[in-house]
Image (cartoon, rainbow, N blue to C red; front, side, top):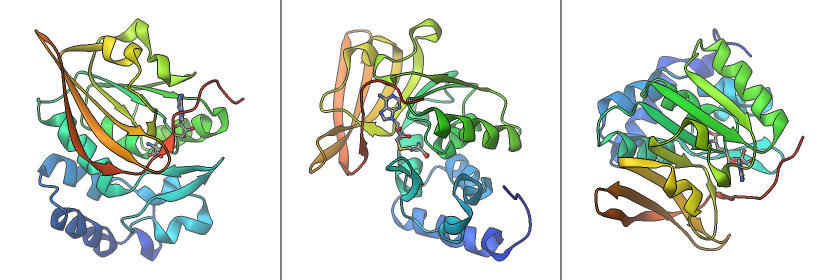
Length: 218
Ligand code: SAH
């Protein structure tokens, strides 16, 4: 993992990605700044690193993908609309990229991943970036991470067919949950907010994520 050098890390290449995100409607300056300054190429294998600043999802092994920058930005922007979250729960650490973005915009991030080798690499990358406000758990994130809740924000990068009740139960009043819901053909990004009166649900847009799977892989 290399934080320096080579052309792909150039400011111009990253700036092109920021321009593209703005064209697609991302306007939160804090989110754009964090994406501008987070080296996405260290979250990929070397052979794919040259594509790191394209606005596209990319493979990270184990049939999983690093999410598209646009959707990372969109989900993060929606989570921040209610102010800086103190505690964020992330389901599906994957490469750790979304996690690194969140760690720079929230006080504390709790990230759950079911595939241990992905989690281990993600942990190394976050250390390299000196982002120390993240705790990792190797578990089925469909159950959340009860001990540390309730959370001001919950974000999932994997799609269940229905939102697990365990997750909405771990949402603080005023907190927001963002997750893709659906099967492998049709998914929608859902936003659920917990108010004093209960849960309010909104559809954000059509998306395509990997499925939320049960159990863990060592
Ligand atoms: N945000 C990640 C995206 C990774 S893809 C990134 O920026 O790279 C989604 C991840 O969710 C995969 O790593 C997959 O293993 C994980 N996942 C799927 N089902 C899960 C579950 N039940 N619990 C925890 N992680 C899960």
